Amino acid sequence: MADPTPSTFLQTLRVLCVALMSSLVVILVAVTFILTSEQGSDPAPPWTFAVLAAVALAATAAISQLGYRFRPIAPGTPEDEARRSSVTQMQTTTLLRFAFAESVAMVGIALAFVAEDGGIVLVLIGVAVAELLLFRHIWPSDRIITKVTEALEAEGGRSYLREALDSPAPPRG
Image (cartoon, rainbow, N blue to C red):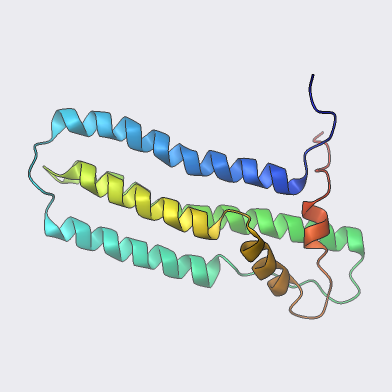
């Protein structure tokens, strides 16, 4: 029998995060099968690792600088409007941070096909770094929720983010 309790926004967001994070693992497995049949056992060229490192640093900087930008809730904003804005901004920035983190894995995959040998290592490193960034920056942990709440309430308004995340998501229609 199905659980009659509706899912909360937080549960829905966590399911989304698990789906996003696991998609990279599925891609890793698929690309590994392709690369093992096409490439030799020599290491990838050093420049490919340098490019991957640069992309990882750029993605980390972009997540920090752009992934946590929020429009603060103005003082006196009605609770339902503040809740709606808070959840929408949380979801939007989560997907933005995902895109930046995922770029590391995608560049690792692209470099793997450019390199004549050693591409599997590039894919593994790219996906591993992306997964670390995803776990740190998109998983809706207490640390992330607190950071978002502080940004939303920076101008003195109340965001009601925690209350909104713990409430049932409205039905889609």
